[in-house]
Length: 262
Image (tube, rainbow, N blue to C red; front, side, top):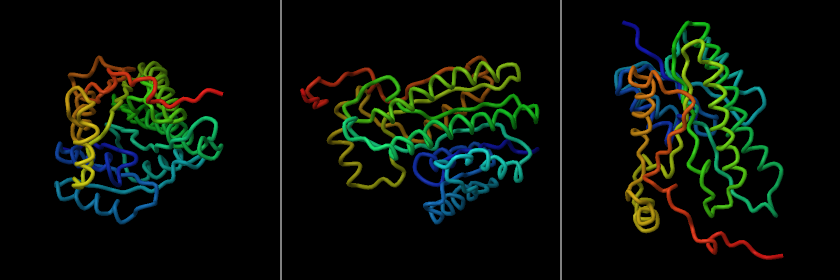
């Protein structure tokens, strides 16, 4: 029996790698994507995925560039004849006060966090429609879409909010074909490398402020994506699920934002 295919952007390392490994454990063939900055890391991810007994291919495209999403799916079409789950995971975090923000930074965040999401989701939907697949598309946003954290992430948060709104439109447009589109909005994500110093920082600074006192592991995000693609998720579309241990239920004191009067 032919295995189902899961395509995850931004999966050469980090959170995307963790999700790819989990989907490999669930028996999916995996298509990895990375921007080209760390080919060695992407190849290491491929080896880990293939060690789970599934097939894995790697596609390279810098999604910050115009037209990159379309080029990426041209490469995907050349390699695959089916797509069951598409996860739009690529994203970058950039911070700057509004009084100091530079246009290049804004354009970069818009390009990777929203434009590439918009067109990758569109291309994934086209592919599924052509193949007659009642597939599942999930975008990975952030709990910044609903909370103004004191992090000077105005452009990042704005694009994550735009992603949430876009998912609702995509869900409507794809619904006649049985293609469902949803969004997962995590908070802090547990690193795969388990660096001692990073863990210590989490324990000292992050865990005390999060109601459930835990950071979400990438495998749990993959399990939620898998649930959304399963028969149990057949009636769920156009929804955003916050996965952050309750972090977005809290609000920071005003002084922590460090706003200054003119």
